[in-house]
Amino acid sequence: MPRIISPSFLSADFLHLGDAARTVNDSRAEWFHLDVMDGVFVPNISFGLPVVSALRKATDKVLDVHLMIVQPERYVADFKAAGADYLTVHVEASTHLHRTLQSIRDAGMRAGVALNPHTPVSAIEEVAALTDMVLIMSVNPGFGGQRFIASSLDKVSRAKDLLLRKNSPALIQVDGGVNADNAAQIFAAGADVLVAGNAVFGAEDPVAAIQQLIEA
Ligand SMILES: O=C(CO)[C@@H](O)[C@H](O)COP(=O)(O)O
Ligand SMILES: [Co+2]
Figure 1 (tube, rainbow, N blue to C red):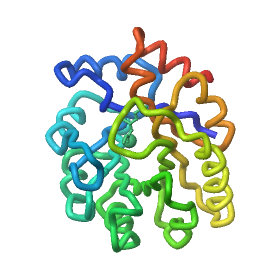
Figure 2: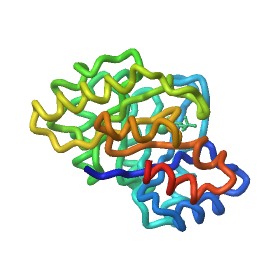
Figure 3: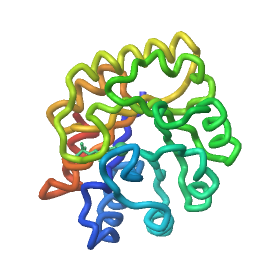
Figure 4: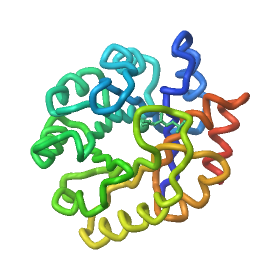
């Protein structure tokens, strides 16, 4: 099973994004997690396409874009042009989710589907075959630095069971409140990719913090 760390730029110093990119480049993290928020789907506005394009020029690592916006289907082509590798949309934000996931793949990206804490795993039953990654939100989306919702561990196991039953090779990503104390448990529950914002960019030595998460 892969053990991938995807540091979230939401917790980086926005005055020095280049430094944050270099930090991740120098680390064993394989992915970069970019949280795009529209102030409608979630009560916060973060950054958008220009930041994704800029980071694309700063790294060869996997750009993992997490869209927390309503009607994400409107921007699939734009995020492809900006350089996204994975484009993840929320089940709760896309009325025609099946079509949206297909269009992400048709555009040449990997399609991720995210579930808010209140959304059951069964919501992806009919789109498992179109999904390259299932993102389990382990906090309510909108902000970094929140506390991990403990029941997310069982939810990861349920997602794993569903994917096995569907013969799906999709990865499971966990996002929100991940740190060195809970990372081992989350991997053990079946996660392949852990997003970490505060635990990486809030640490004195972000490269060492990433290393700790990988070895958890
Ligand atoms: O999508 C989100 C928040 O909505 C996340 O990606 C956070 O940015 C993770 O930050 P930490 O909880 O790890 O600080
Ligand atoms: Co995120």
